[in-house]
Amino acid sequence: MASDKSQTDKSQTDKDRMNELLDQARRRREEKERSYRGRALKLFPWVCARCGREFEGKRLRELTVHHKDHNHDNNPPDGSNWELLCIYCHENEHSREEVARWYDKPSAGDRQEDGTGLTHRPFEGLGDLLDKMKKKP
Image (cartoon, rainbow, N blue to C red; front, side):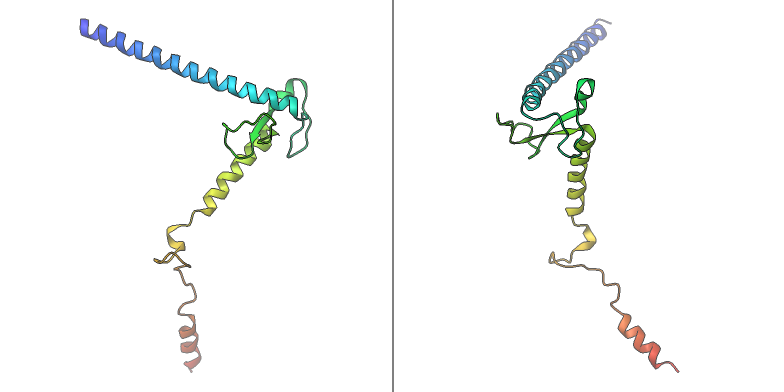
């Protein structure tokens, strides 16, 4: 019974430690985001760089900072790696990147063994078939 209690205490301690670490990580991320977001809001007009919508008041929270090179650690003081995008355009920007990456991946059937060209030849025997059809009376 004592071992059950100590095991429960240990798992609770581990959970507490995990929650503490997660809270610290969240706070650090939020502080970092606040710092470059605050600077970006001072540098740029409160307009989405893609759709041109203007933001003010409560709606300002819908305006996000997009890192042009997708590196969230690249935060130059002049803001040259940032652009303000509304949440919709920001989501669209990242979705386009994902779709482009997906289309750039060749599928297994797209390449020959030497890595070039297509392996599927849909009209490969068509000439022979047409010749046979012409010869039929």
